[in-house]
Length: 260
Ligand SMILES: Cc1cc2nc3c(=O)[nH]c(=O)nc-3n(C[C@H](O)[C@H](O)[C@H](O)COP(=O)(O)O)c2cc1C
Image 1 (tube, rainbow, N blue to C red):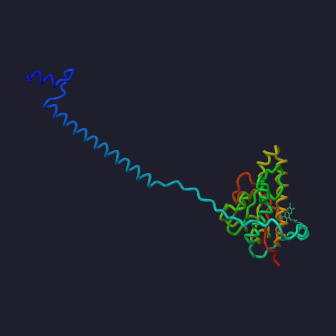
Image 2 (cartoon, protein in one colour; image 1 turned 90 degrees about the vertical axis):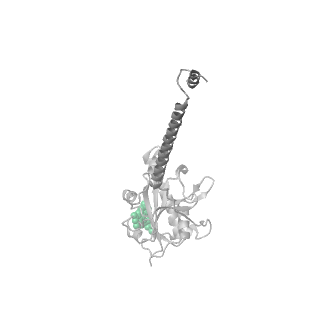
């Protein structure tokens, strides 16, 4: 091939040389260079990924929410026992208690009497409530901590592992009882649904009276001693046991066996 023809073959449409003995060498070199750059780039990316991975592995994993501690209560008795008439005749406030513990079965029965579900379809409770609004919550103040009664499922939910029996009240009856029940009410929600704070408050207090009387009569029927302590400092109790904002302590009911 004449040299000009070979030159033309090497030249592109704009006359730029795209192939030729020297340019082949140049292409080989530049491709090798390109491969080197790519290799470096991949290495850098790989290293960066490894650093990011090890950093994320070393980082503090978000703490998983602790599973709630639940105590299932034995099914309560719904018939039998001391007659209501006899319990009414026998009920008396007891303020000094023996150290004998209240059994789980007794506790189950007391909680059911106060707020247990007695009509499962509408989840209606043992104590009456204005419009079925149910403003009350019952807590157990015990040696193994503070527990909230869940009427739905008839169980206890652990709120705290602290023993508040000596600190929740100044009254000797509470301090000497193996456990106390704390009745709290939702005054804020009551004001909202009743439309007026004073009406809402009255509804909550009346409901607390009903639930507490159920409890006192059930305790009497089980030959347990109780007293309804209304001398409660709601602000101090709220702070001490960290009650949710709209839960106000109304009644403390120490429970045990009367000290002989
Ligand atoms: C609203 C209310 C608040 C009460 N507060 C206390 C109290 O803080 N401490 C106490 O020892 N008894 C308290 N009691 C219990 C009464 O003192 C007791 O019911 C009264 O002396 C009648 O005796 P009885 O319950 O044996 O029939 C309270 C009772 C009610 C109804």
